[in-house]
Length: 267
Image (tube, rainbow, N blue to C red; front, side):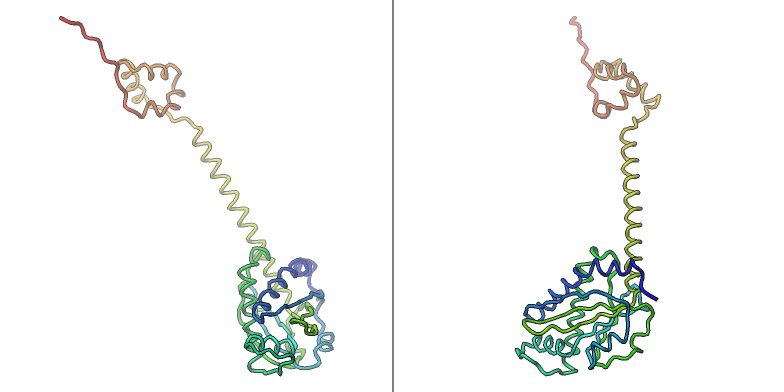
């Protein structure tokens, strides 16, 4: 069964960001210019894959934490793995000899750095959960049993280091892994919408509270009238405006009231 159009659209629209991040990490690791040209995606076909990789390749596998039943296979020709590994160890060789133990580990470490960078820097851009786990690597001849998951997709790239000849690198992965990212993105948008709604409701309630005059009790009003009788003319003017004006004049009501002094008569 083919992957859904939504999954294929997601891959196409985000491939440039992912590849750019991978190029930057690999270029830093090997201290050389790296080119990676994305060639597109297609539904997985083992016949097509085995026709490209007629010899054993380095197969680095990993999973998304949000889809533990899925899997990614990054298939790297041994020439690329040998070049990356040798440059990591600062060995400048035009055609380094492939060492399974050293160069598989080098590719695992490089992929680990790429995934860490993607998880940190592209989480918001990609719109979903991007925790990775179970990173493994092996040098192996491909068999159909390695790709027994349903609805797998193949992404094809041409990769070259410095002025070397480009080699085909493939990423074979389960559609469910991309669907898990899309699901996380939808949940995130829903939560953001709820938070925005709650914030708007809170602001509306606060505004209503600020605009609602405080009620004046009968006892408080009687006390104010007593102060007027003692000569507080500013308060007298407020009281003439009614209870609403009283409630809107906290600076007058809160401060100490100074009675007007009476003029005494001499004996």
